[in-house]
Image 1 (tube, rainbow, N blue to C red):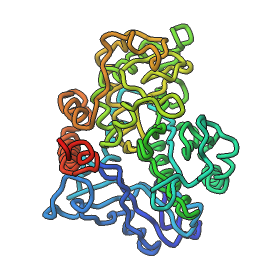
Image 2 (image 1 turned 180 degrees about the vertical axis):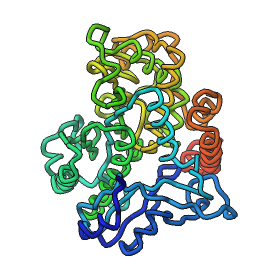
Image 3 (image 1 turned 45 degrees about the vertical axis):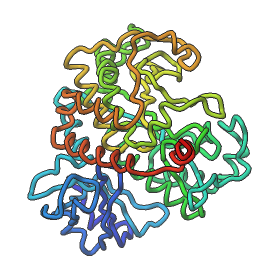
Length: 435
């Protein structure tokens, strides 16, 4: 039975709903709707001009309606009179195929048709900066090895604890919070779930973290590489695939190497096969490639891959298999779109199942110290343009994600690259003025 948002408002003292959708660049867009109008909005959706966001539309397009999915509703713990609800974009009575949440829903249906449910957990790292974003918010956070710094995490206790308290209240099952490998960087972990629920939580987590940071006079950023010389913001994804009931791990096999079944290796094979093309989505900004192709950071390691390799429980590779029936994709960064991240994981993995993809040789070496010993493994793209070109050539991945989405994404991202190339930087003058 579908939840009535009008009743939800009455039962929970909600005055306003934020009907939200995420555009192709990961921007969260919303309309603030009074509870008295939510019944009509639940039926028809809130109206938007798609061209005014990062979607491939023109001002001549009809209204785009974000129809709220009541199963996603979350009452804002820090402002209980407001509730957030994810919307599915519709135009002229049809789903907008380029809208990221719709792209993911389509992939979930493909997995369902194969009798599978994909579940993921994400590790969304972020920095706490001053409000203008110019420097770290904690002037004393200067340790050379700041990861798990006890004093530093307690100096930001008010922010971290407030966010964690809210996740506990929401029933997300948060289980650990820590100061990460860069000065000013933090990570907060919550339990894994079905991919659509994880994507909604990921989207809301970014909104909540930014909001609470602002409340405390700070700025939270998920930017892949916000501070030169420091470890960047990753968004590692832990992936497992279950039967249609969601109760039996379909890819767990304790008799097989590392506890992965043959089909599990095929799914992993799809990830490995499409990894360089996936980077356009998992690492979608110009800045992303300052993280995955970074020189050694002040802490001693970037904790980011630059080569398509996999391993057991070893964090220096793009994929690690830390335990039976699951693996961790360490490629994505903080700029990845919460919905497109999950969609591309399913698309690549399902294609791997269809073609019985082999993940290739397992490497157990330290890739940071001995990566030169690996011969023939693909390198990740050097920049956004390379990533877009590789994605454009990957016909199978583009078709799986949807031609309309893929064309729109490529078009807008190429425009972004062109904008970047037209920007004049201080580096150019410093290095070229006297040529």
